[in-house]
Amino acid sequence: MSQNIQQILDEAAEGRRLTLDEARLLQREAGLHDLGFAAHRVRLRKHPQPIVTYVVDRNINYSNVCVCACRFCAYFRAPGHEDCFVLSFEAIGEKIAETIALGGTQILMQGGHHPDLPLSWYEDMLAYIKANYDIHVHAFSPPEIVHFAKISGLTTAQVIERLKAAGLDSIPGGGAEILVDNVRSKVSPNKCPSGQWLAVMEEAHAQGLRTTATMMFGHEETPEERLEHLFAVRESQDRTGGFTAFIPWTFQPDNTNIVARPLTSPEYLRMLALARLVLDNVDNVQVSWVTMGPKIAQLALYFGGNDFGSTMIEENVVRAAGVSFRLSQAEIDTLVRAAGFEPRQRRMDYRLVGQA
Ligand code: SF4
Image 1 (spheres, helix red, strand yellow):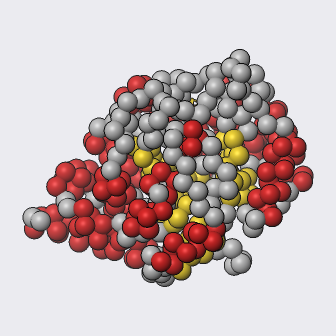
Image 2 (spheres, helix red, strand yellow):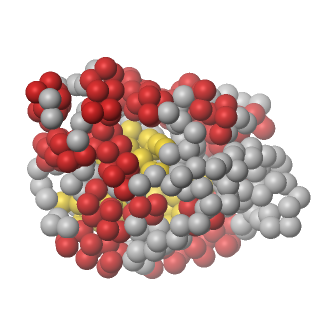
């Protein structure tokens, strides 16, 4: 390794912010283990306790009807397709009751861009949930919020205000894919552009909602565009501080309209470590057992990850793209312990369950 790269890694591990040029150099030339070691040092500096957290939750997809037709999506159905569904509030309630019975503290709810459901349907759904269950609702995504604004004729700020008043607690970072419009126009041309994704998140933060940020990589983006994504998230976090975590995962090509070689584990680990090094202002980085499997997820805890994500009592979107790893809470505990850490259940805002 060149002295220059070693010095950049050491300084980043100590907390100095990376420039874009330095990130480019690391992306191109740093060794896998050197990147991982520096990322792990950042992780230990931010989280000195040997704890790995996770949330017990369930992904509830309230509908699969969508007019967006993103090329990477194996989940959606166009309006009128025989497999279309919209869950009843009672069916959603049953899934929440099961989640609570399993010790769950939150639900993650997302759907497609349904052309006919009015904003009041989403408000009624949130009100129904809050009237009947004690559960954190982590729901929708910036593209869904933009869609609701279009169908209601309101601004995205007004939509967030209304959904928050109805019971929305936080917003997941879905629909980010790669926050570069050149990529978005190819893989998801009908979804909101990157500036709007970030603006919705920053508006949510201004209204007191915490959110996460994600990145789906390994489809039609270049390595440089992955870095652009990381720097866009970092700049946004500088403005608001509202992101609780960064969640990178690899694109799964089965049943989609994108032909791509699935990324290898080293490619995933390099990207995870680079994210941990660049995002000096984001506290938590999640590993992705859902797409990489449990063993690589364990390894990822030494490449910058400090959080095992979620138990995902139910997950439909990645499964539709051909990957179906399943883990129970007990299995996550065992995997985290075997990797050398203490597993702890947390909430969306990273407070540990059992602590005030
Ligand atoms: S990713 Fe979301 S917005 Fe895109 S087609 Fe699938 S359900 Fe629709």
